[in-house]
Image 1 (cartoon, rainbow, N blue to C red):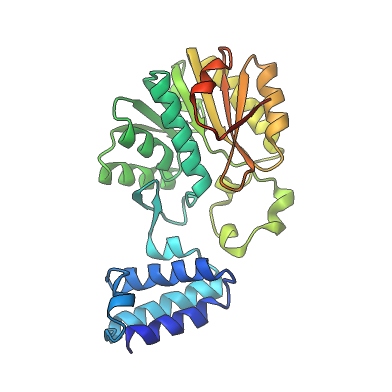
Image 2: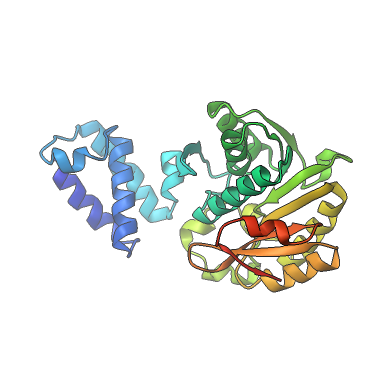
Length: 296
């Protein structure tokens, strides 16, 4: 089979589960690059390239599993791209999203502009947030906690590959850190309610439930995290959390009740997605970029 024929076959197969042409083309190219161990450019520069039978067979088998079980392509490939890094992912960790890249971007801006040194990443999962903060602002001392031992192994492997020195601790949220204090506490906690489970795609539902769904009301989890953050922040410290759709106003109110000023940032779809809570006046946020949309 020639690579141009493989391209057509992949398009036909993936159209069964992916309606968006751009998403389908992206996944098709990822498959070709990974399973054939070729640069994506070959698809366009050498359309008559003959695909080895063994590689085609393996691609067939795994694509069938992808379609029948709706397994995310990142799990089949064993990796994903996040903030310019290639990170290992397994079914034991949440697949990092573009929205979380915005969380990292804001975290880096805040750490640099406020000269922060100590950072705590709660529920690190694959380690994507902690690793990016350390990788792109090496002076930081980064600690990351994670309840799942399986996820922690993945995070440690990613940190080792990226040569990011991070202190990983196993335990639930603030549990492993004792009385320690940090300049920034950052997290992408599980903010989806079980009531919204039926609205999610089969691919998303193949990700770890503990990383997707909050136990009980997600707003109660945020209130608990904010209350605990107050006890673990340095005098000029702050927290930065990713939040779900429709949650900004109530989480801001919770933060205010705990003595925080807040700023909310919108994601690439113009939805409120990041909340920054700090104990000083909101003026420092004026130094950040235009994606700051409101104080609440």
